[in-house]
Length: 200
Length: 200
DNA sequence: CCCTATCTCTACCACTTGGTAAGGAAAGGG
DNA sequence: CCCTTTCCTTACCAAGTGGTAGAGATAGGG
Image (tube, rainbow over all chains, first blue to last red; front, side, top):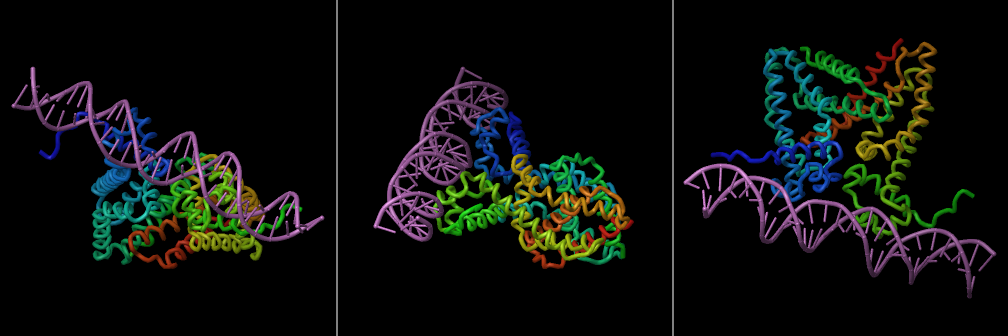
């Protein structure tokens, strides 16, 4: 009773195209008309599913956040306690950043657009952040990790990922094909750093 | 003979306001009308000095690149050879990133806007990159630094700075007032890393 | 004093933007 | 077979965009 099976997949296709466009070219630089043309559909079809461009962005952000959260949850599940789990998380985040650069672009875009949408994103990630901080605190309580501020740790990880992604972009911009090596090296550095930072 | 002294400082004020607006709100999100209102001037006054919005962006980018380059040159001059100079450069870059976040925002904006403007920026920085790589190679030849690709090293430094700046932004977004400590810590980490990476 | 170059203004325009109103097609359950 | 819901359409609009044309003001050199 919660919903009738849709007869069309247009809504999902709109979300996909919007994510790609917003994440790579930016929100302001993407017009509903362009989006519609790419989809082979009229602009009003988009507005049928999403009452306004801003609500389309909301939907894209919500879905992306949910997707990232799910991927992280899945990657956490398979690992035991202690540092193995940390390493798994870092690997997952790097994988997402490298394979789906538009997601990182979307995050940047959201932070640029400021409070209304940014706070929504933070709200979306809140449960995940809660779980992560709870895990870190439990490990600290168990004496397996050195005590520190879990939220600061998470921010540090995210920023390092952004830096690594920037590296890939810049290398591409100056004509050096990045290859996966630099990202992998960055990941290894971060893991080494975290290991020493977390050792009790 | 190269130019007549201008009777008005409007042109410079336009450049200042445009840098701030482009770097914080983005190029697309900034209209010439808004810019004009901020300056207490008509839009056409802006278009008198800069024939189009894109040429205004060009001018902003050129001036910012020149300014950053000059600051780096100055910071290099005062230091002796070897790692002291590297440390000076890193300090300068971090200082610019923290005190003038709009400059970093502009760089991000330029890389988002793609080839036409991005290649211009790269061109602007080319002399500086040349000097830096020449210095690094000379040090390597003298056996003071371990041999590696200088350009990759530069990109790595820049990306780390971006990551540190991201950290500040995110902390602010989640309501944690960053304080200078995290940026300083990041800087120290990078210097330590570079020292070990460059040691012969 | 005039004249030229510098500077800012008013008036206007073609175009694109996000968004509204409303109608028609088509599928599926009764 | 009808009729409701789902889906996508054409037609249109108010507002804002970057940009053009050209006139008026002001200062300084001759």
